[in-house]
Image 1 (tube, rainbow, N blue to C red):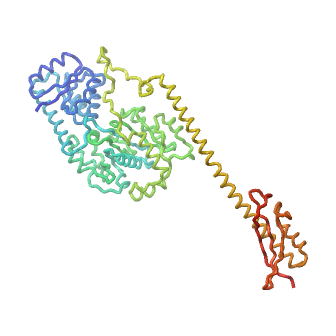
Image 2 (tube, one colour):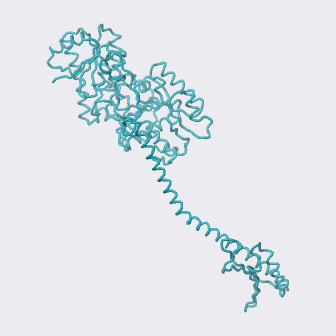
Image 3 (cartoon, rainbow, N blue to C red):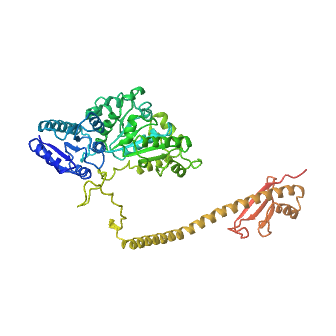
Amino acid sequence: MSHKIMIGVPTADLETSLMVRFDELSGCEIVSVHRAYAELSETLRSIPDLDVLILHEDLGPLPAVELIRDVTRNHPQLAVLLMVDEPDPEVFSRAMEAGARGVLPHDSTIGDLDTRVTQAAEWSQTLRRHFEEASANVPASGRRGSILTFTGAKGGIGTTTLAVQLARAAAQAGRSICLVDLDLQKGDIPGYLDLNHRRSIVDLVQAADSISASMLSETLYVHPEGMHILLAPREGERGEEVTELAARQILASLSSRYELVIVDCGSHMNEATAMACELAHTSVVTVTPDLPALRAAQRLIAMWERLQVREKKDVQTLLTRHSKKNEIQPDFARKLLGVSMLQNPIPSLFRSLEEASNTGDPRRITDENLLKPYSKVAGELGVLAPPPEPDLARFSPPAPGADPAVPALPPKKQKKGLFGRGDKAAAPKKEKKGKKKASSDKGAQFIEFAAVTPLLLLAALAVWQVLLFGITSMYAGHAANEAARQAAVTPNDLGKITGEASKRVSAPWDSTDTFHVDIEHRPDGSSYAKATLAMPVVLPNTTSPWDVTGQARIVYEK
């Protein structure tokens, strides 16, 4: 079986020397030779079944260890051999830590070259075969998925809740997602999801350099909502078994299977979490709007820079427990931290989270005021949709005729015009179209308003008429009661009875045209005073043919 090999060497002499020796090996196929890493990484995209990559230590422009680390992070199934002029234990150790499969002297004999390349190629082919047999969903290009880490500036500020909610959102969007609990001492994900699983990340440590699909299937917990979960150990002291190298290999294996790997790093930094943040495409530090949390975040980000884990410019922050009543608002927090901050903070709504946290069922969160910010953060971080085709080269390919050893500057972003052509002449047409649309919308709104206005006026008049009826009924009742009281004293003086009753009626209802009092004697011997008022229409001084009558029984004095 032929082994596909790619070579990266800085000089033509080294290329010639290697090609002469590989010509003697019938089982090796040299697919390409490159003099610059930018060209090499560009070619890696089109060869997903490449077996071995031989990198010379002087290839540049970065140190060889950094180049190896970049290749192994993006192509975890590719075997990388570092070629050196003088091998020594220190070089071998650094190369292996970076992810290389071995160190190869540049003057190796044909037999040594055949042995080392064959071993590396068989390892690469075996790893790919395991993933294919287990339907591991490896991307067609052989590249890894995205790694997204969340680290809390301090404990108890919602980092785990955020990681769980974003993992659920990604699973519901149809993406293959793995949630990793890397808070090795106090992992809380089982409590947030009410799950019990006997396997954890510690079970992968011993075989981290050759993890098979069957190992992962036994270790990962498959949640009913579709996300796969790698848990922290139940015994916190066992977290020390997850070394820096093991964390690198485990995360590389996961990223080769899943489109997205979300890592909950907790609030405590160790070798494993530092490696996760170094490997991550996006690293987010969660903070709350209080000075202790902001200062803790400053110390954490500064420590990452000192330890060369992650540069400050590559760190993003997210504000949780946000409220307009807080003294510290997002703009001030962003200035204080001096790093990029996500535009959508998580509001302070613990009561909406309480039931879900206590029951271990995140579906209990039904408050839209909380779900919408989570959804916006997911969109902002690219969790809901796969990212665009990534550029695996850190530097752009050199222009024709340029020195391949000198990396080209990144291309400037050009403003796109209509249909992406950058045509400035198309801008006025676009603006005119927008104005026309705005004008048509304004006309439609005016017509709709004109049609609705009469209905609104009729409704207002009806309400006002009901109010006038109520006032008239009240005055009629009061006038009847006063007339009955006066009739009991002066039963034969209708003028005085009417005069006393009119005192309980306000103008203009007390006019002689709209108000009068009658005494009614009934066959059963009872007498009633009746006050009749004309009910106004729309305006109090506009009478109508309808009257409102109030009556009260007269109790004569003996």
